[in-house]
Length: 87
Image (cartoon, rainbow, N blue to C red; front, side, top):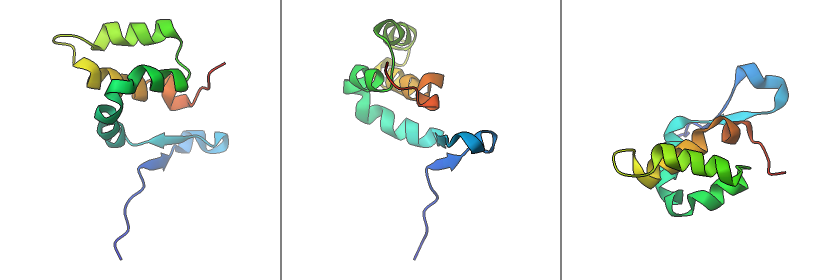
């Protein structure tokens, strides 16, 4: 039976904080799937409306990557990676 490598890896620098880091390839695979719901996902990750607007301004639109890139940037941002929860 073949074993798949986990998409979630333990970050040795964060051993005591119980934080796991998701592989970048997984985020790239997920981004197109959530692109149409990216704002809802971002809010669930704890982003404020103005933070979502900034990411969209930086990555959405002609020549900037579009909604898939915007979704990826939201998933891979420091806030999402740290697991910050909405307040």
